[in-house]
Length: 338
Image (cartoon, rainbow, N blue to C red; front, side, top):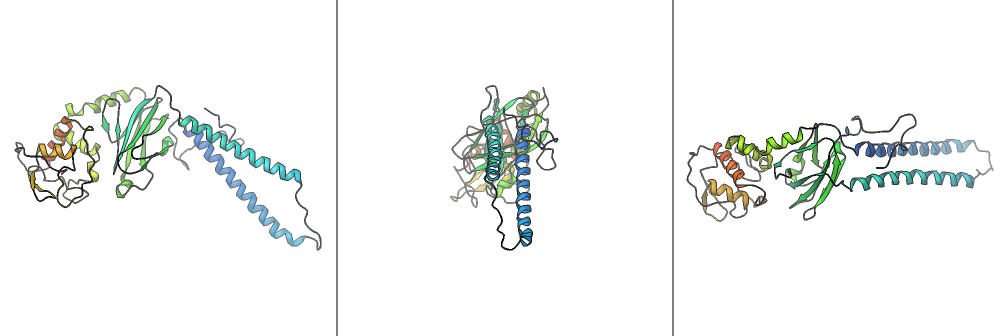
């Protein structure tokens, strides 16, 4: 990686974000990016002060010239020196930025790969063992590649502490890589307007200490076996961003509320009715546009291929826990997303 030590203030040492202006850096790129940003900012400020100072000098000093004496033009040598100096500074900044960019788009071969899926209101992170989580967890000191995907809208994935930012375009896979250097808890956000739910797309980023990441992944990947079905379903409700569209208190959102819906009839857009049971919930999750609940738009993305049979059963158990329906509610034909 290129060295930015030439872009420092004399006596100040290499410059990096310390939290008072730029966010505290937690990746291997942070020091270099911050050094470039701070240097460019300081040079820009000095340029403004010099230009304003010279303008004031010419403005207030012009009245003291002797009458009939024309001001002399700057020497050719001074003009050349100034031009070369500006070109050298601009060239140095371009070279430093270009080398950082090249390194940031060239991931190492041994990087750990995580898929980032964007959908209205939430980020989903899929790990190599197919575990899906609403939080981004990474090990410290190991390169990580993020594969960025979107099925509908354009988003911008941004993790300020890691100095990551990239557009997420529907139908096109983006890619970012980084190496976390500081264990801790940070944030990833959507830095682009993506509808009303875009402002709620804030996901925790957890950098684990050495040896802790593997233990965490093993424990969370097996929660369907260790938690009661209702609790596992609640966890899946949180992880998959269901709360953005479906409330638990009866209030109306983009989709119907989950409160008290299981075991009761729901009226569909075509005038028919369906009982909300296990089959209904399964079809609603996998093919939400098959039967649309009256009064709501068919905007829920399909989860076919993204959620397992056991997970849909856990979600159904969670919905049943929110209802007064008996535990042995009789199954019927499926329907639209609750």
